[in-house]
Amino acid sequence: MKLERIVVGVDGSDNSLAAVHWAAGLALIAASEVVAVHALGLLARLTPDGERVGSQHHRSEIAEELASVWCAPLRQAGRPWRPVLRDGSPVVVLLAVADEEDADLVVVGSRGLGGFPELLLGSTSTQVAQHSRRPVTIVPPAPPQPHDP
Amino acid sequence: MTTIAAVDNHDTGPGHPERAARLRAVQGGIEAAELGDSVTSLPGRAATTAELERVHHQSYLDAVARFVTGGGGDLDPDTSTSPGSWDTALWAAGSGLAAVEALQRGEAAAAFVAVRPPGHHAASSRAMGFCLLNNIAVAARSLADSGERVLVLDWDVHHGNGTQEIFWDDPAVMYVSIHEWPAYPGTGRATETGGPGAPGLTVNVPLPAGATGDVALRAFDEVVSPAVAGFSPTWVLISAGFDAHRNDPLADLAWSAADYADLTSRAVSLAPVRGRVVAFLEGGYDLQSLANSVGATVATLAGRQYRPEPATGGGPGQAAVEEVVRARAGLGGGSQ
Image 1 (cartoon, each protein chain N blue to C red):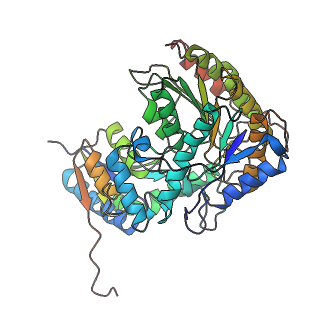
Image 2: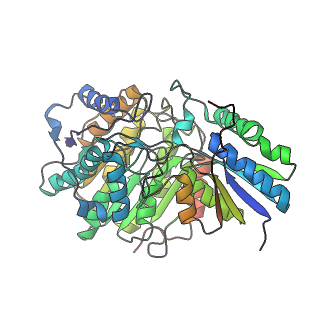
Image 3: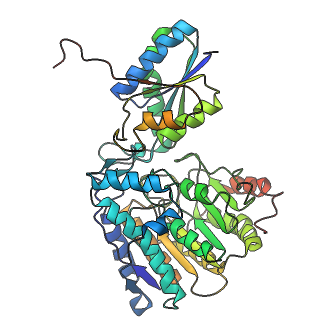
């Protein structure tokens, strides 16, 4: 069994940050490379105020956010890593990139943005686990710290 | 020409671009075209479970119905639903069938199905891109099951991944899409040409940001028409999204209302006889541009002219069209 390449889904949520932390820790132990994947949906083209964002500017901003903020734990781990930005829905994009990268493991947070755990279809993480041809790890959110409300 | 009025209890929440005001804009655009008695309205109907199951898996239908009627929420980061969304989606899918039935009775020369939510991103077991049920696929499958040869022409700016998936191996349905690339949903390369059961019957024309209407028309003349000629459709269904308009907030093509009129004219010419063209509203999120574009499209379907803004030209994309021509050179079109 090999663990050369890990693909982790990233959407900027706290849950995906937990997944990135976990993937970074595993990559350190197993000497793996990590590919951090973010799916660009339709609504990503609008600001919170509903204003249009030019596609190139928008992609650049998201790419910067992905690399500098959402993937910070990967930088800190010191293992090889790279971000992938792709148009589409999160489940479809994550599964496609995992295949393209010949990933040895797919890592997702337990609740991404959107999806609903009670649904037969499941949340994004459940759908990935159901349809992936590769091993999947679902990372729960980080436990609240003692000082958290 | 028949339009379908809509049942609309689909609340996507504040700020969502796929909103109820779109249908009011559609109605306003048709009125602005001043088509008078050339346009009549039908109320539409709900699709039955059996009609939906020709396209969508039963487990998917059950799960989505349960989720939506149980309170709704987000099916994915883009696709929001409210408790009334399921009934509205059933109405949207059924209204396409109602339009087909009306044309089969000889009641009109063509139909425009003004419904929401849109449908072409919905795959057999997946909701995405604002879509729950694939309205046009439900109608296309119904026609194909009765022996018709159906062309689905999709000019929404976003590739219709759901429709492509549903008919990937179906020799009775040809899927043609002109869309922006790269863009959501990330599918629609020129090399995606159909499965083993239907080789060459999927035609994708990806265009770069900024492509103008003249490029789309060139794609139609040099790629679409030759491919369709070999398929010889008996019906032409159109996924009529209007988000390739230059003012649309969700994409970067640069078309105008007049370009949609010209595309509609070409689409109508692909039908073998009168009364075999149905256009389905898909995207289009700038309300005034949507109104203008729908007015121009419906006028053309009614055999009239309404061009509230001039056609566009001079943008990039000629090379992209040439690339598609080369990619399809060895396919022999849609001959079956």
